[in-house]
Image (cartoon, rainbow, N blue to C red; front, side):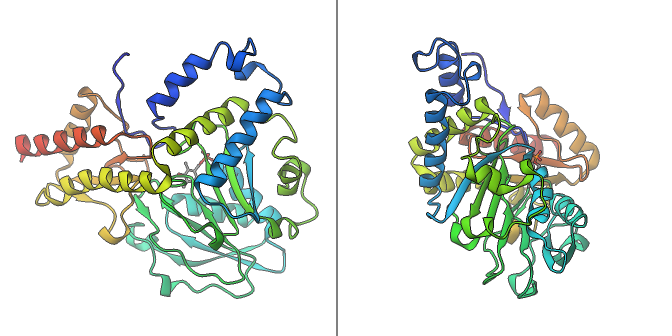
Length: 362
Ligand SMILES: *Cc1c(COP(=O)(O)O)cnc(C)c1O
């Protein structure tokens, strides 16, 4: 096997090497069909099996209750920013948005096309370094829904506990931490995520939606943008991204083999700790962007105190085989994304690199 990079890309991001090898092996002649999964009908028995296996695996792994549908859509998480208010923000209601970063801002912007979104909490003034305290979030009992971003990919913060919203549906963009730890799905009306961080290649968007919400959908929504269209046809209304769904299923199988979501969560904690420890033990040579209690286990954002040294670190890291460590263009600095498929060894290699860089340069 050729050398794999230490891949800390923010998305699309690392996939399990076992999944890639297996896909490669199955590519030319999938399940004795004489063709690849990409070359067969989405109405064929073989694809049907792949599709339904992926749905069943996700339901089982993530302990999704019976009263939820799992949908495979297209358009990324970004189209969900639009589809959610289009379907669920009635003109006479307001929707509450909790602002924890750039993706919350994008979601909020789309809701304005359809009704009255309200920012009920925001940590923007603190440069999105933290998640708001639960007691500071005031939403209306009559809201259409409450929307939040469970993990802030760009700023490196993550919700540890979610607000209780009672009868108001809680909607979460979990693009960058879906399936990274156990979640009580029953707290949510809708969970959505682009696949390309924790679940597979880009092209598939997973939507987990409580069935009673489907009945509350706005009537005047075009066919492809309605959730019921996809729920009623098992996400096969039109041609789905077949290869992406196959890969998603293979990644889910890998999570199963790793011991399931709880085992993955422990592994993720250990991985992130290795890098956060390097930051915390650096006597200020490195500083984390997120406040410690809001730190993400998926995206670790940090700066080198000296800006010239930061440039040097990024250049040397690149030369040493580390990929994707540049912070998002909107915030700068460094970011290591440690999604499910990033191995502990990669995090340890980064830690060693950071410690050595500090020792040489401080
Ligand atoms: C990556 C990301 C998105 C954008 O996803 P697309 O699939 O590119 O639309 C949205 N929200 C969060 C939290 C993300 O990390």
